Image (cartoon, rainbow, N blue to C red; front, top):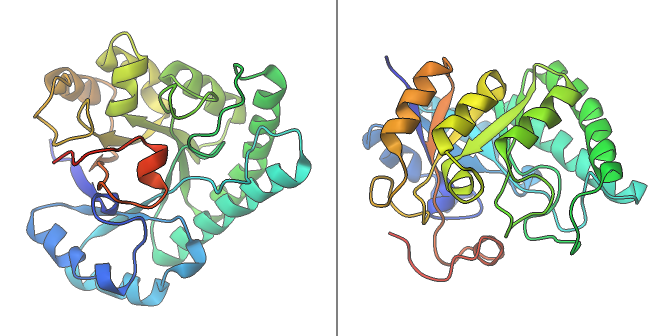
Length: 262
């Protein structure tokens, strides 16, 4: 069975500008099918140029992003929720213009933002309602938004695959799914392959990451178990290697990357 394997540009940079364009041919040359581009600034991408380069090189494309600091879909402040919805809408529209059908990430609250308390029912309801609105845009544009649960040290809002499944089921849209990440699940789940099985048909995107975010295969992640679970749930999406460079402004701090990992 053939799978679509990808590599995330966060390995090098938190943005994708002209200086990173040569990476596309290198990634293709290494045998990858997909490049996952950062979308922290949707308006900063040269969409026509990048679309042309992807076509020339022969790479598929997905996008990964996080919410800006003053955007939180669970917030009691309407303007803060609106900022989150507008940002995700821009990401979805940018992906569609570039011909991609995937925007993924912890798109509910900023990475590293903590209230000091567990998530509340009111926050959950507000975020679900926001996603019902986002779903309409995603469906119109033909783009899937894959919501990523993070470990407890990076968010308080969504930590497990079971919570993520409940969230997307309440949103109830074919264009809102789960991004399952093996790094975060290694911290939060009792059994990572079983967590993937439980998330099942709601999994729209998978990040391949070692237990320490280093090179896959160099740590103790159960890759054989993951392979079996991926096959059992009938997953046909992308499998994207994600790790972070040591000196990405902001992102390295939010993800607590304090040393080179590869």
